[in-house]
Image (cartoon, rainbow, N blue to C red; front, side, top):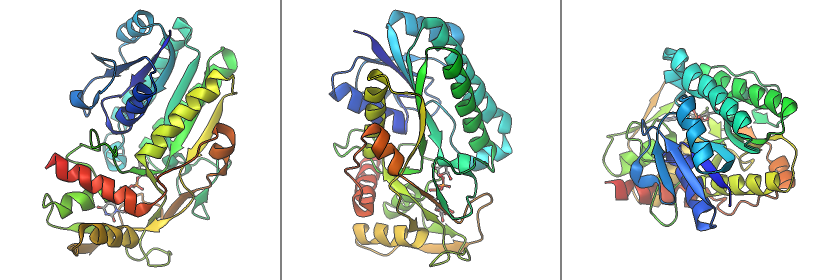
Length: 324
Ligand code: UFG
């Protein structure tokens, strides 16, 4: 039986996908350098501690485990950091993806599932992005991922490798079983930060920008439960195994919530008001970024099961309390 290599499988999203793969009885191996991941998040299969930019290690793992599918999550993901240190992003996200692809082609890996991002769209005029919306990323993070999408397209055209690239919108929430979640202490994401405030790790939550051209003036995003996002990767695997053609798909619900709506929801789940400060806009934030989400349902047969902001927040808060 061939196996699946999960890079970044000790990180937030990778560990949820690996858990679902393991629960389904798939053979998996994780490659993670543990720079931001956690050994304890690897619940199934072996963990190889190593770097996606280390071709010798990657080639050996592909060979030793008879890898037929790669799911590539390992990446840096903080937009402001990418602005301050772009070469870090072009190395880890772009150059290392190139190394991964070269190793995959040489080893005859057939399937590649790639973690892309809604950040490839930049600031779409209507605030709603379909897969056909022009890609105009406004920061090095988005560009580092878009270049990887281009490489994938070119490699798939020239070799038998086929891929699914998923453009994630705003991922949040945690494993309903309480085993894994978003564990990065210095996370910048809204729901995570608000949950840290609820349990007393932060003394307030900031709203970055109250003067956007949105219904309540705050930024609007498409928040998706990590369990549904993870399930999309299993659908992508089935699609590729069934011979599906290379494809790039949005992964969101197609519904937007403002920062204030999210914070109201966190306060309601927590059962107490939050300490909120309003601050100027954060550089590089689009006013609104919501997915057109029909294509993924049609192409992969993806059926979201956790499409409820309250449920997302409740699971994120339960995990945050457990982290303590
Ligand atoms: N926000 C606050 N206060 C905070 C944190 C965030 O008001 O403490 C606001 C932001 O300004 C934005 C919204 O909440 O309007 C969501 O911000 P996040 O930082 O949670 O997420 P982003 O939308 O900035 O980023 C997400 C992914 C990125 C991806 C991007 C695509 O995390 O990886 O979407 O636009 F690049």
